[in-house]
Image (cartoon, rainbow, N blue to C red; front, side):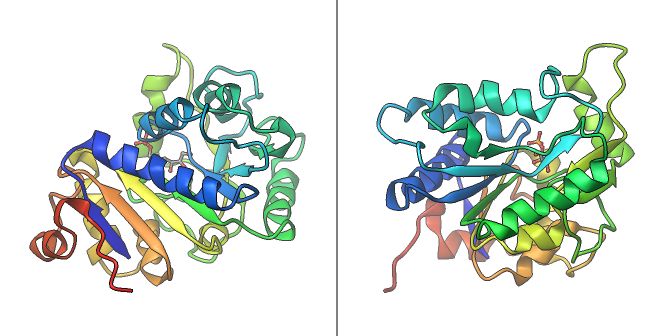
Length: 258
Ligand code: F6R
């Protein structure tokens, strides 16, 4: 794992956006796994700002998850989020963007088909991830199987409480979501995880320094050969090895040793 600690959340998210732009420039027909959530909003804002210089015309995207029961038009659906945050503002071919259909007649079939679309098409070059305060990635809640494939998951109370702020007053946060599995995520050739804010500190420490355990699904990333984690100081504040990480990458700088 390459752990880069930035001096602000803004620096962490804009560096993540630059990582994505570099990949798209180098490989215009790349396959990207995308995430939603508050952490990603400044990442997508930066991609929107770069839209005049970088073409997404040949890029294919697969989002991590979607709430079961929400149609693509629902204001809190991840279809809508992606349209508003990114897809409506860049030159991507919408036929090449994929988000699980939360309103599919059979969510289980939709999940299986979605997983097959990812793998049959050649997998993902880069998977962008946020981190739940409970250690989830995608909607793989604590005690998800570390080998799981895309499937329907029941959301944890903590996740539903965290996301309630995004739903209209009185509206119930869905109980189920379709999410890429932990095993599906682990097959991405490269992973870029972004976490900002002190409320993520315990989950970040468990992910990086804790035992690999389904209790913190993100900890399985310790086994992935190519992970970059971009953090701000708050998210890094519970790391025991912080001094060493600052020594290896002062100010989140990367040293090329050839
Ligand atoms: C969303 C997703 C989730 C979020 C995580 C963090 O597609 O997969 O794992 O990345 O819940 O959300 P924020 O960024 O809102 O704290």
